[in-house]
Length: 100
Image (cartoon, rainbow, N blue to C red; front, side, top):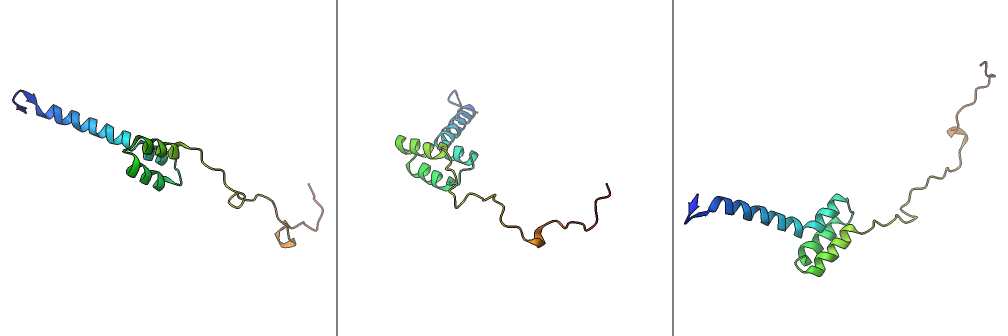
């Protein structure tokens, strides 16, 4: 389609691609948090959407998304220590000698 010598279809395609890239750039902190499976993905997304239009807010959201995941505390860390064993938890020993 041509409107006064301007290729309208090509201009629409270019503007759609550029808009998509800009939205991806704007949402980059949320995308990074999702790819890293951050437990605070919702917080990163809210900060990104509400304050991402400012450079400081976008940088803060990116730091939230790319920051180091915290180590679990001792209360959250699973314990691998073996507790006391009771007679009913042990393997039974055969009363006969091993005939090998």
